[in-house]
Image (cartoon, rainbow, N blue to C red; front, side, top):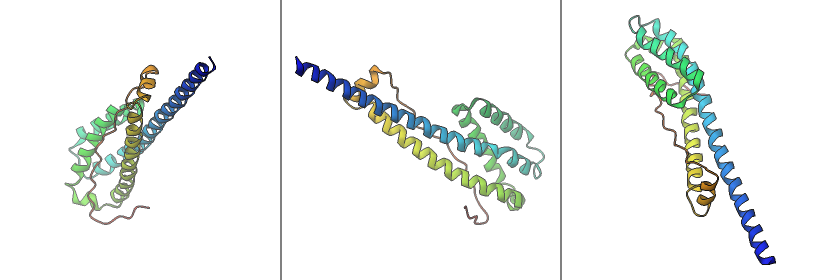
Length: 178
């Protein structure tokens, strides 16, 4: 009888330990996703400055600017990453569009924005890598035996990897990033 109770206690302890590991991994994924949101917000906060800078050189592209401004507002209100991905695609179009204006790329204000954008792009890529590592670790944990049984019992679901394209900022001058 004592052996049976000991085995039951051992099983309960193992389940609790594995459950706590799953919770810890899930929280890590959430934390890394929040970090990505911070960098996306910083990136998208630069959009109004970038738009104003570009407007001075281009008068006929107001539709693109308005669309980006609306999408940015929607993202900032909802923090929906799918909306962020759509905004990111439009943002990348803006960056590509800027490449057609050599005078703009030489302006001091644009160079300052370019430096900030380059730094944020690099931080965003690092945050995306950390998030994807956390997701892969978490998804692996909930997939292996016997932890997958515990994960199913407590309804742990797989997390999605984060994929977002960043703008390729072509630079005329070498800019050092602090």
